Image (cartoon, rainbow, N blue to C red):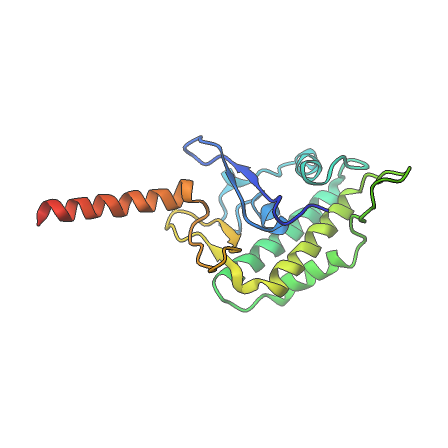
Length: 198
């Protein structure tokens, strides 16, 4: 199973500068494959089943068989429930029972089994459904035990959601190298202007 620290995703915003975002949870990384419910088609990266297989294989290794239309539709439904739940958790709202039901339904399915290395048998490649169930397990862990740590980037023009695992739980930005750095630069510029006017 993918560790919570191994959740980075590559994002390419409209400025074309690709960067790596670390949302802190596998389920939140899966949410980054879409628009987080903001209806921005340009953010969608899962346009066909092969896109889903590529994303899953980058996190879990080879897929036992390609995703079919049912896997793809189920993945979109699970992702919508995760992103809705993440947005609600980040804003302190009550979670939607329908989204909870969707995540719980996926958790009830077989997930990627762990295995102990060193024997003569290696792991069997998981199915797309097992991988999605594992993502749902991560969503349960994220929203049941750390929901108060789910945050939305404080930048007005950014809606990325992440799990704040910083020691003081004071992370405000999706990334200091992007939104945090721009905010520091704006604050510095404002202080500089104020100093010139004094």
